[in-house]
Length: 386
Image (cartoon, rainbow, N blue to C red; front, side, top):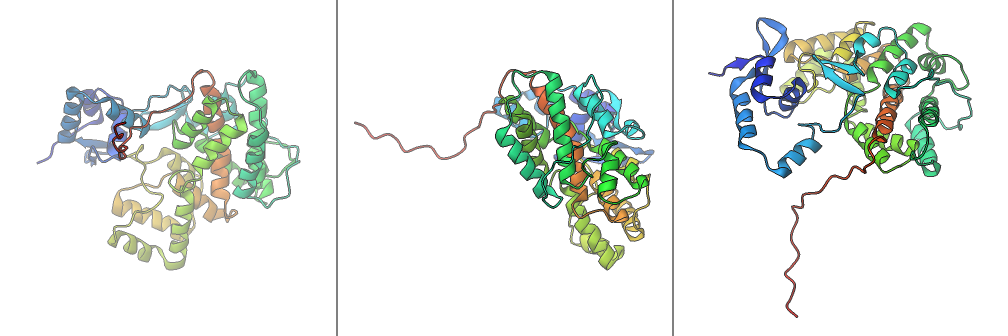
């Protein structure tokens, strides 16, 4: 019969931090279950912990360490921007959920960038006439990347000025009202013809989404920045990576799921997915086995459409998985009938702040990021004797 231990016992036996235990869980190396005595906590299979501890004691080959570093078991890039503390994300030591109650994206940019002056995402309104959306955003960034100046040899103040202009241009491309004064969430509300109250909800979402430690997109932005590429090039590298459906565009998969729910009803959709063992987009997060606190913070501020609210409750009850930030963002889009690409637009705009922060932080390391490949292909034919 399996035995179960607490997070603190698992960390002690393995000699690792909590986020590493979460990584083991997400990769199927460590089984987890809710603590019957306190459902807010989790218990970990003692036998799995012992196996992992033995592997550590036996020593690991160089290529195993390198592979784990690349695929997230042991992050090795030093950063002072974002981390996880007691199951919650923090920006430079400040709890993100607490920040999201009152802060604007401009406030968070100043914090993450270490800016010495107020950040301003207002726009001069000189963008092109392309229809709002990701095509306009990526086209604008590609044009700037093709002509941008290297980040090397430029002062921090100049880079901050360029960074805030880039965020403003991304926001404009997704439909924020150009030429308007005021914080970015209100420019979005004006551009999408929404009341100020919905703008406040978007303010919360933007703050919650600004960064999330060393994600795939943050790593891509850092790689580009390490080569001396321009800020728009580094941002474009990060946003291109963010656009994947397994990363920043995951809310698109949730929106498709919610569309099914609104057409067919929650009972039919839940029965179909669970009977076929299909994954439910937007539920569960490997870093938050007890629930994504960002999603909980956003969903506490509004009521999703009734059928979607019932669906979320039913999935949580039947699977034990709580909605993540992608589900919360998709619910916000459904509740207020935001533009079709609004979820990705908000995510991309907010995360631009974090991607630029990672790019500028990487400049302090005067070394190009260059992982080594471990060749596993065929060897060449033997060289014929002369």
